[in-house]
Image (tube, rainbow, N blue to C red; front, side, top):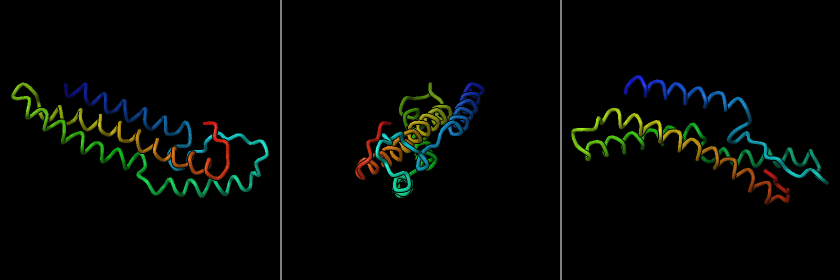
Length: 128
């Protein structure tokens, strides 16, 4: 079980790092907007301001840390409640990874949504 868990953590970390290189993420996200009639100097200024707002909420990394801690605690408690047949350590490790991935994705989505809503509120037609 320990080898499988270690391989899973290494794989998940590699995927996270590689996907982070693929596109701007979190507060650096650049949504696709309809550029018809858009003043690009004004747009860049508005985008930077909206990205600044996004930094005021937890990033994917910060959220992942909190999710890992919460997942590990919950996994350990559930294994303890389930009885002797379950390993608290292994269950806490799985909970930590699950919590980190879930919370990290939620932090990323939150920052992207802030940028989208901010730009839409400033009159841009946000496509994605």
